Image 1 (cartoon, helix red, strand yellow):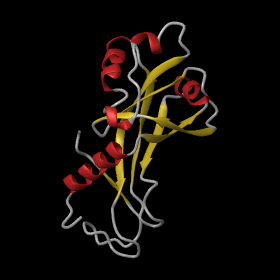
Image 2 (tube, one colour; image 1 turned 135 degrees about the vertical axis):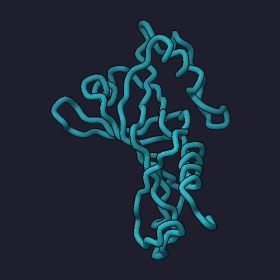
Image 3 (spheres, helix red, strand yellow; image 1 turned 60 degrees about the vertical axis):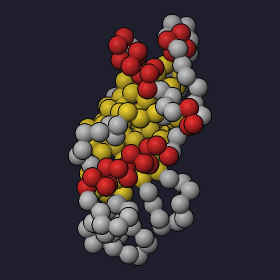
Length: 168
């Protein structure tokens, strides 16, 4: 990646979101028992993640009970020890009203990602599906580096996450 700076890391995070159609959503039930679920998603910037799920799915029930979530988007196509990932922590909710209308514009993302567009009827009323959004308060990327080599930005020769503060 040449000479890295923090804007490059934000661009790296955006590229991960653009290239990977699935995220791992971390939720917990009211008692704190953790659960992770892979979901197809569309992102708006680096801090908003949209997905459609059945309202009775465990992760959907968890979001209703305890909206705090974690997110990871990673590139599973890279060789071992070449990790590329974006991590986020924030809150999630089922969308309604104007938020739902905005979400239907964003989700499912660009056509080349393979997702099908949804209508309001697909995610309201008697439909078992709902549209959700996670809004991240904190976002990090795994600093890109070659195995056993220091990263170009920090000179650190081990895996480490770097917070992205750019609001995009």
